[in-house]
Structures are given as C-alpha cells and as structure tokens.
Length: 299
Length: 299
Image (cartoon, rainbow over all chains, first blue to last red; front, side, top):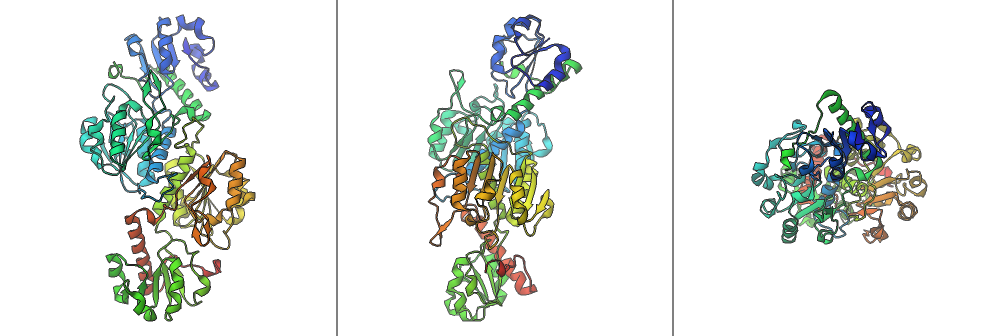
C-alpha cells in the first residue's frame, strides 16, 4: 500500500493504483503503508506510524528537511530532483539578468553584457544543467560546472569538484548556486570564498539559502557595490524560511520569495507530482529509480 | 574625404584613412567632405556645410532622428542596424524575465513559465532576430516574427507582416517590440491592438517608445493587472527622450532608462563604431553596403 500526504492528480492514480494508492483520509491505512509520498517536512508525522515503511518518495527536489535521524536505516529515500528544473533555471536567469541590466534602477548606470562571458554553475543536477544549457545556448558563455556528478556533462565547458572552488571563484562573471544543502555544502560560500570573485560579479542562489553565509554575503555587498546578489531562497529562522531580510533594501540585490519552483504555477506543480509518482512506479516495478538519496550526506 | 563627428578608434583609421578620414577639428574640412559618420541628431549641423556630401553612415541603429527634409535626394544613407543587437536582445530578455518572475516583488505571486510558450517578435532585423534566437534556443518557444524582411528567417516558426498583427496579438505570451520608428510604425501599438492580447501577457519595448501609444498602454495596464509592460525606451517630449513617467510607480511595469545599447558599456560602443566604419568602407570600395535606409519610409 502507498500513502500520499496530499491528493494527487488522476495520472498518479493510473500509475500507482495497482499498489493500492491512498491519498485521502490516510490515517486509517498508515499501519499497512509500505511507501510514502510526502513533502520532507511532513515525514516526521508519518514515519513513526508506518511500521512496514520501505520507501519514501518526496515531492520536493531538496531533501534537507527530512528527519533523517527518524528514518530507519533500511528505508530507501528518493527525491524529486529535476522536477522543477525548467522553472527554477528560468527563474535563476531572471535574477541574473535583472542584476546585469539594472532593471528598475532609474539612474543610468553601466550594465553588464553576459554574452560571451564565463558562468560558474554550482550543482550539476537537473537545475544546474538547465542553467548551463541556457548559458551556453542563449548567451554563448563558457560554463564551468562544479558538482560531484553531472546529469548532462556535455553542457559544461569544464567539470570540476567542490575542492577547486577557491581557484574557480575569480574566473566567473556570474555564479549560479544550485547546490543541495548537506554536510558538504552548508555555509560553503563564506567571506573567504566570496571575496575571491571578480570586482564586478553576479551571484544567484536558487538552491538553499544556507549554502551561503548570510552575514558574509551582506558584508561583501556593503564593501563592494560591484558585487550583486540575487536569491529566491532565504535563511530559515526557527525552522521556517524567513523572507524578512535587510537584503531587500540594498541596491545591489534582486530577490523573489521562494517562487521559482512549484508554488509558481499550478501546471508546474502538477507535472512535479506526476513525476514523483512515475519515479515511485519505477522503483516498485523495477527495483530501482532515479534520485536515490545518499542518506550519509545528511546525517 | 570622410568627416566623423566624433573621435574614432584606431581600427576605423586603418579601415578608412585611405579616403582621408578626419575625426578631429573637422570644421575646416567640411567643404571637401563626401562622406559623413555621425549620430542622427548631429546631422542637421553638418549637412548644409558639406556641398560634396554623397553618403551618410550613422553610428546608431535607428535613424528616425535624421533630418530627412534637409538631406539632398542624391545622398545615400546607411544605418548601423545590428551593431547593438546582442546587447539589446539580452536586455529585452532581462525585462521580460523580470516581469515573468516578479523580480523584487516581496509578495508571493504567481509567476509565468515562458518555456514552451509563444513569443511574438515585432521586427526581423538584427535585434529581433537575436531575441528570436534566445526564445527558440533558451526557452524552446514558438516564435512568430512580424517584419517586412527577416535577417535570419530560419529563427522564426512563422513569418508574417504588419497587416496580420490584429490576429497575432492574441496568440502570444510575450511580445517583443524591436521595430524601427517610421511612417508605418508610429503609434502602431494602440489601445485596439493592445486589448487583443491574452489576459496574462508581457510586452517589452526595446525599439522606439513612439511605436507604442503612451496613454493607451498606461490605460490597459490600469485595467488589467495581468498586462505587464517593460521598456528601455521612453517617449520624447520637446525633442528629448523623457524618462519621467507615471509607469515607474506601477506594479506591472519594469524599466530601464535607455541603457540597452551602447551607453551601456565602452566595449559595446567601440565595437559599434568599428562596425559603422566597416560598413562605410564596404560602400566606398564596393559601391554597396548593408543597412541602406529607405528614405521614403521616413519622409
């Protein structure tokens, strides 16, 4: 039996009803549930009530909100990485271009031509790959990718690892952060790394806010007007993403309140839900699926 | 002898010195000048003093500021169309994406996914073609072009004429205006045409402000919050582009004060000047060149 914490589109029922998909009044079925479809922050309320649980499939791309310490070791976890890639990558480019072109700044100030420049893309998954594709095909940029693994390696002019970041920061005209949040990436972009960038540089974060150190990015933005920062993601305070930030008042900032992904549009969300169902179907019928989460990265 | 109203880069001298290029203290040479390199608004101060004038090459892409009534019929005019295409097209996309993604709007509001949608590009010259290329290659859009002639027809899914605009307005998710300003295009986008668009639509103008009727676009933006307008160009008042506009205060607006082109960056301007020199070289040595202006369009 499969438990879903939210009602699912008809397509999901076609894919999963043969395993007994329940997406309404699920409380009474939890004891029998072997698979769970959920947003990561909901999992803590379910996992203890599902003794037969074998697999969790998240609706979200990021899984850093999962309560890993509560999930039994034998339970497999799959994320929905890639499901929001098109939407989030487009959003990342909106932030980068708004900063490059000083959109809504009434003074006449120098703009930045991105065409032919260098993009540094942190994260080689679905979102990072789509950002790289646009950099390459729309703006003829040299694209340096930083990732443990690359979903579409052919889109990157150079493929590097996190250990090379010190050396790479100074080569980019625009830096995109599409990293997952885990042990390796939390607080990664600190003052030391940020200060190694070019005098004029654009940093855009569409991953998780906590991969950037909030006070460090604010400090460098105050010190260098040529350092521009755009973000769709904000730092959590008391467990909740907090959109109140001194950044909104700063001239070298562009922001959106976490609207790059599914909250954006009913159609994007629906496609993402169906994609999660397809991936769970693959796992249940074939024993393997995409986006298996390496739990050891988060513990 | 060639007269230039401004000092030119070294490359221009290499290209044109064999015809006697003068770009400093030009007053004393005007009587002998057969060719004039100038910004359109400067031409009125030169044309009467140059009895031997045979050809004008502008530094700008647009030529609507030329004093056509003062230019003798036998004088050929060439524009610098295309010289700013890369920069202006990138800028057009910055405005479109900023509106699609509500950049710097702190409330969480629905965004628009452009990927896979329909773009209507008015103008098939250098700028329109580059806008179309990005629409197609970055965002997989269906691209309808409206132009008298297409510089790169292969980039457009459909190629149409201005007479079809009534029917085409309602098909687009985003409309780019990269039209030259002439008899046919002045005041073209009026209330009637604008009201034929989809309920949710983005209009971006990087051509000339006067192809859009100012009060009509403001009226429709007040009536329909889903009508978003972005512009880099503003309506001239007393002969001068006037950046004071009620638009800046409106929520469904994004603007920049005419910074899409050469004012933006020293490098873009230098390349544009050299391109004008190359085109004049072609005309002087071969008798023909690109961007010949059809004066009858403006008279």
